[in-house]
Amino acid sequence: MSGGIDNMLASRNLAVMGKHEVINASGSLCPGSYFGYDDAWTLEKFKQQTRIKIVRLEGNEMEFDLIGVEPSLANAFRRILLAEVPSMAFEKVFLQNNTSIIPDEVLAHRLGLIPLKADPRLFEYRSKDEANPSEQDTLKFELKVKCSWNPNRPADSSEPDEMYLNHKVYSGNLRWIPIGSQSRMYTSKDVGPVESDILIAKLRPGHEIDLTMDAVKGIGSDHAKFSPVATAFYRLLPQITLHKEIEGEAAERLQKCFSPGVIKLVEKKGRKVATVHDARYDSCSRNVLRYDDLADSVSLGRVKDHFIFSIESVGAVSPPALFIESVRALKAKCRKFLHEIEKDTN
View 1 (spheres, rainbow, N blue to C red):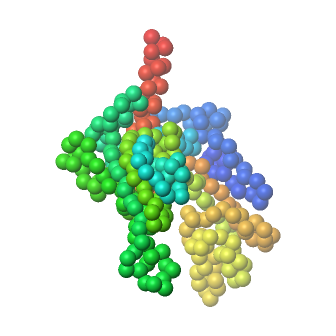
View 2 (cartoon, one colour):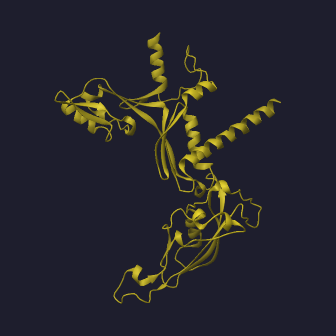
View 3 (cartoon, one colour):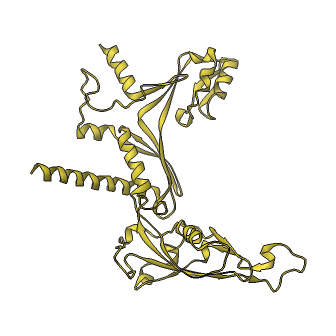
């Protein structure tokens, strides 16, 4: 009986990677999937099984392990991060003059994609019916740049940087115009572009750009410019098992079949023996299964409930704070769903 339970747990928790197929790939963590096995969902069991472990946090990038949850929950966090956690972005561009070679609509599109440092949690959503911007829902910026000849340019120079003045328009040229009492609450460093060296346009003498912009709060499902992350994705934890000792030339060949750092060669009584050092960063290419003498010595799989989650913020909000916001958004959805159910039952 125990052997049957062990086989069931293995198929329930591990997707096995064969040479041409993936076995047990379908989700089977739902209660009632296996006869004779009590896998009913309870809150206490969920609390015990669910774990979050931060592996790496560097600047705007974070990698963490989400353990003990179903794929639907991990995917819900991913989708919410991309499309439902708000950020600030330019929504309206008011052009007074644009004599550059870039069409007005292309210029406006470029400006809209510039990420801003402004924390969206400090602002309200702007109503579509609201005619005038307010300090609670809008940030106003202006861009005024005019290109001219450099009077001190060398006579034989052909370099644009030496020949022209203001011939490159960067995000650092944007100037914040406070509305109401915003100047007492924020500084230009708090709400300006995340990076000052984002190239917007190239000009030549006589070209001029003169415009103002309104930045508002929005979500990625309305437009990609409101997405607070550059990327948010996950993958399953790889699992590599060696069934026998592999040494010598075969061990070196085995090491080359995997990503660097996955397989390590150790000295054992004067022999080089292969060991699994860190399966986490394996790309699961299955190259090892091409060799007949190695294929039976290795088992490859992925743990179904262990997600390696990566978040890269655009810079306005830190990755940990973004993940917390995604959890809050999912909680709000659940509350709304429960409210609708209770309303229908009553």
